[in-house]
Image 1: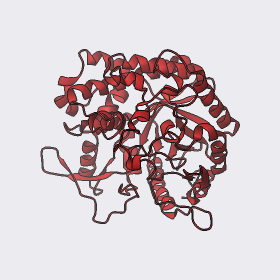
Image 2: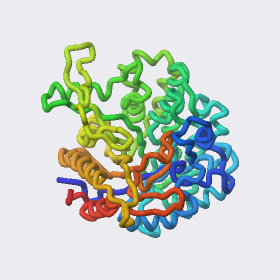
Image 3: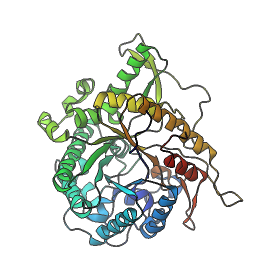
Image 4: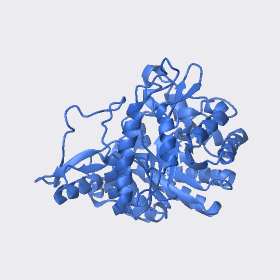
Length: 451
């Protein structure tokens, strides 16, 4: 058996990366609106003020989605566009924009997948301590309830949080992303706990308010892959994937998914981190662990592991010299789309959707007016073959969302990286479907049988 008959093919974006209209129609400031204006933080000084101007061009963009044959579109809502202060007064114009977008998608036969939070946190709540504030889960629950009431009559697929490891780890630990803080574990551990409480509270709100809702969660973590077919290497990779180290816990798979999926923190992490968890954390696990309809994963690359005679029982192998890399310098390791889903499904026993996968490439409009990106087609073909093999080996896969629908604002990299199926000329906002968009259309039409 290959991909299931009702397998969903889509593409994904995030509000701050494409919408623009950063200071229009009553929208409040997000941490990214501020951070992108701090000199030296973003490559070439780029901001998301205009981005792809999707706020004004959404109807044209939906027409392009239809041209590509997308069955589903994953996009995020901008929290401060809906609640300028993060809570309290609602911005009607923000609600109206997303209503227009959702109606346009449905009119074109495209299923909306709504991510409640993809990093553009309200600046007003950041000033009140953001996720470190014990009230932060309640704020997020109120926001989720607003979205459920406003859009739940037409949207049935919701994702609570996108890559909590990254907005927490890079936003509050390394300072690489907004709001650019570098906090110690004594702050970071309770913050991560509150973020997972927010996920649980939002899930509860969605289930209460949206009939026939389907809810998922979209963390990330580079899969650990066995170096050989030997059973001991597979065991080493499995252990490495779900172990939580003292240094790398903020980006770990298990620390961010065991509480949500299994209702418990991983033992390997508690050894180092339990001392920082808030009082009564055990009680919170009931809220954190809500039943989910699917488990999302953003996967781009993996690492190889083999069994080792050391305290851990495994060791990471260096990537081969000259390993192919994407434009952003991420190694190309297609098997990660086999091993990630396989090991995650084995552990969490919940159907999986790849909520992001793709590559940054050196794309340009050629003399013939087209964008030729054979490297993207080859990358996607290899990764999707690995994903298909996971389905053939019994992993319950519900869908795949390509990152990204269009070239956009790539966070700290500004506009210097192009991940889209659609090329965007930022000076003119001209959109051009890349060759890969037409190729992807053929994959969708055949449900992946032509790979």
